Amino acid sequence: MALRATIFKLALHIADMQRGYYASHTLTLARHPSETDERMMLRVLAFALLADEGLAFTRGLSTTEEPSLWQKDLTGAILKWVELGHPDERRLLQAAGKAEEVVVLCYGGPASKVWWRGVQTGVGRLKNLRVLAVDPADARALGTYAARSMTLHVSVDEDAVLVSSDSNSMSLHIEDWSPDRHGAVA
Image 1: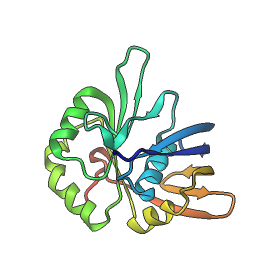
Image 2: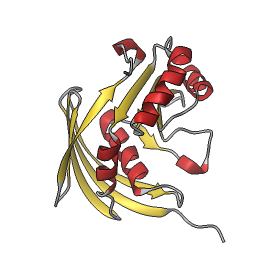
Image 3: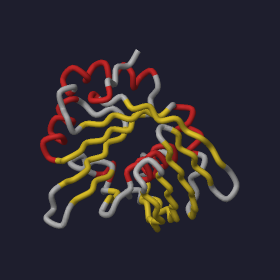
Image 4: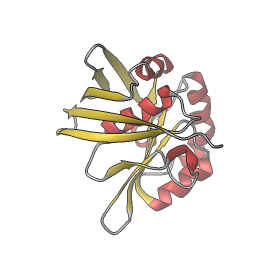
């Protein structure tokens, strides 16, 4: 018998001073049996950082043809394609051909730096690629916020993100390694 996804309910309140985006979202997340709380909460973080009308979670880990999140317009054209982790160069090139913007949120620390050095040459020419990096300790701490029913407040100002729940708060630093922002990694 196959394991079923675990359902989470989330009230997400976003204040993004950088983009001038202030909104509340009521979301339902399905966590695949093989997905960790940490990864699921990173999907929530990606949603908060990129929130816009039409941004949605996909079927996720259960299908390889879709990213973690995407935003489509009314015609079905893909406006944003959002990946988590370390997608290979070919997947990024394909996504860049399908979407107006491709965003990768990586969270592996030194492993992410190795990944980025390996794919940077091949994807560095892509004008529609953004690569954001979260410190692994911050990702682990964010994973502790997972609850079947959650209310989160996310404030974004430049590269600092404040996440708070009813009982806790934390600050995350997001690094932008995007090619157009001279995203070299030491």
